[in-house]
Length: 196
Image 1 (cartoon, rainbow, N blue to C red):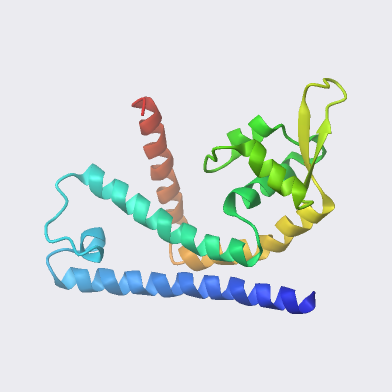
Image 2 (cartoon, rainbow, N blue to C red):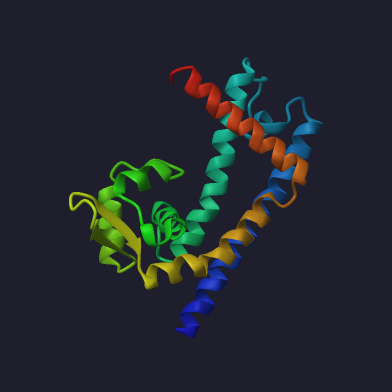
């Protein structure tokens, strides 16, 4: 067991190192782009002309950044034999405490939508990470609860997840992070207002 934990920590460190390596490559890429006519995303993807629309460039920037950040987390979660939606579900259930959550509530709280929350919960239950229990107040309602094993899995990931967040975004100041968060929330709110 100790050897597996050591190997898992090694994989988590490699994921964090990969994130730092990509960050350095991005910085070098942006610096090289500044020497040429195009910098930023246009330079990174080898675009010959500036983007015609700022909205398109912003969308592609968000998409490229999200894919890069998510890739590091996919490696980390794979090292712990868990998927990102499964990890997110375990965190939701830990926050819910003894009350647990119904499947539809889990779906509402997930960061990224998954097509079938019930199947996700089925897999977690088969792995012994969650359990289902009928509500005493309403027998039609089934609540999902974290098991001791599930709590250990999510607790073991707390440190590596935080380390990876810091490795990926620690070069930004508190003010920059606050502004980034504000703008991303504003972008999502505008998207909902547009009916998309």
